[in-house]
Length: 412
Image 1 (tube, rainbow, N blue to C red):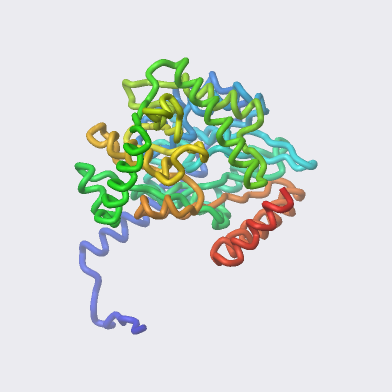
Image 2 (image 1 turned 135 degrees about the vertical axis):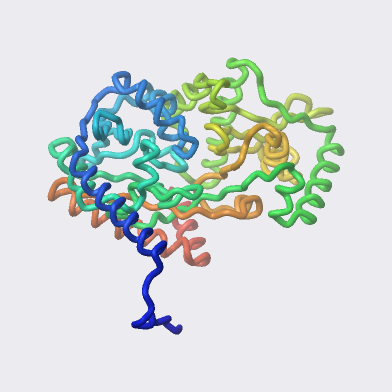
């Protein structure tokens, strides 16, 4: 690789000098601003609701840090909160919705509902968010540590893209480790046919025709989005039963079994605001006709904030029309149906699975902020880094990953 050298007689242009000066002024301004930011800690959400909702109007702030999403979780789990609010010049610069999780003597400050989040950004005022890496990360880290002193041993903010839809995260300069899980997205183009062209459109249309014929041979199908809250809640309960059976067949723990988790997801169904294109959870299904009239072949749950759709989960009844790949067929129905409705991105969420790669041309790496607050947190943070890197090493090697999954299934 050759390095281009600057001629000693060559002088930077006036524009280049001006750009350099502006960049340095911005960096200095942000460093001064960081020194003047005051971080407050709140143990309840309602006092912050107006500011919170104002920040989340930014289309690039994650659904998972929205007020309604967090409120549904807090209502179900009732964990202690340590919400971090940064104030500069009398204006809210950011809100980091954090709860306190205690396990084996370790007290960890994590994003609210972190265990069921696919992407986390925090909430930042646009001016602060646009500052990106010009923020004095050392000063920022110190302020967060001081704010959480006595409340937590470790600040662990997981599943953060360091760049999201063209914007760098203000958290990117904090101590991080590359998370073992990536997320997969399908950008929406003007119409469904254009969107398909990002994929292997010919093969995908062929597969769709084969699936359609098989469904028709079995008596037909109907793609349904239940209209009433009661129907939505009922379909969610059916999902729990299907998923429980699936986990049991694989010898894996059921991550949806806990009553609090189920209460949280039911609570999300009731969080909806059409004026801002928001719903916490919406259930979709493929219902069969003919001899199997009324039977449900596949279910999925999606969320929406602005132009961003996130698929939260899916399940199939493995005893019904198994040769149709009903789960993937349901995605076709959902994705095609969302075109023309203001959607720009369909997010399949975290986890490397074949069907996601077949649908999603965009892969987004995620990172965890690992910031010790106490001496115990230093040890716990180091352990998290080691475990996370180990998982990433295994997942990057398909044969080793398959072997590890087999062991996990055998030990339950």
